[in-house]
Length: 174
Picture 1: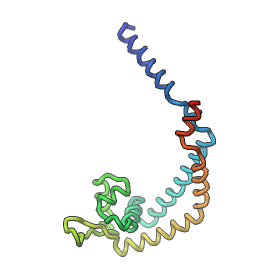
Picture 2: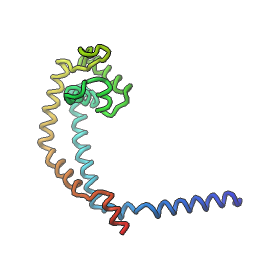
Picture 3: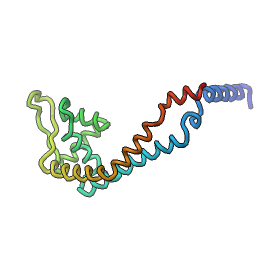
């Protein structure tokens, strides 16, 4: 190996050793039991989301369309149901939200309307057909939460009993 390459390798190894020395070992910071609690909580969430996706598909909707209808119908009163607000609340890019809205309008579940106070803005409204589907799905989801909710809550409580990582890192440093 030439001297320049050898120096680069040595520098690289020193940087790696330095970075490793500065970071606490994850296994020291969080116990296996704490990882299990986090994994169980994620599993319970995934079970509910899987149920939700399957329920939406049984009604002829894509899961994101159900989420869209729910987002618009349940928009907080201080927010208007605009594409921008829907995108923000669904954690979507603006153009993805537009495509989702367009597909849902094509199915007759949503409509666009002009904002009565600012005609430059477009508001989204759930149609009566969309409301029927949304109500049916919401009822079904509430029933599922009544059954699965207690285990989800237990899993969340177990996770919340875990000390924050920053406290664990401080303890590991001592």
